[in-house]
Image 1 (tube, rainbow, N blue to C red):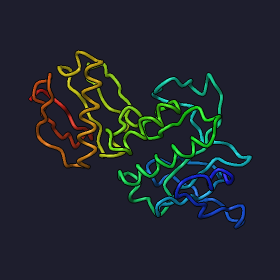
Image 2: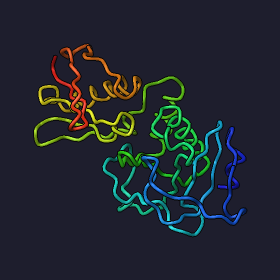
Image 3: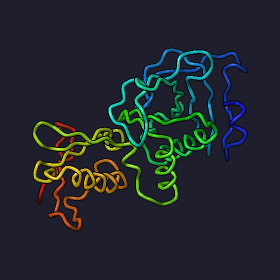
Length: 239
């Protein structure tokens, strides 16, 4: 990693505990960072924001053994053993780790780091435990950074309930709530998953607790969005 960083645009090593003989701080206060045993790592600075790159050196890597969603042509680590390093917002970003500017910088840095290592096969986004093929990750993140849609397929999982509703997995990282489509909107499941991505794009762009009462999409009935504070949900119903 020390050899790779000089080749990255606007990236610097702002703290090297091996050089300074100090431990790397760990914890779980960022909404992303898992509770980790001490990992050797580096603090990387990009565009004024610092990120901890953990799981380096001879110690254990970051645990990605239990993905809930697989995106692109990537094998579960249980079938194709691998070792992961982690990239997490630094301690001073704890209050803003969920904000789009921090996430954009974090993902852009991840894409650049992945591009420096030919052996990199994928990435995992921990809030949704989505394991993503490296080429898919780089393509969709780069598209977003260049003005394209929010990379919902990478960062937000999609599940089906026994009540025939569909629900996001990971949207709460950005909005404090998940999105649920009622059964009437979820009867055609592939189409419903695409509708959910369109709704996610609209909602993430607006921010927490700032969503319209109704949205209209071609080919769909008018959709009403209802806040369910007790369940921490935004319910999408025919409205």
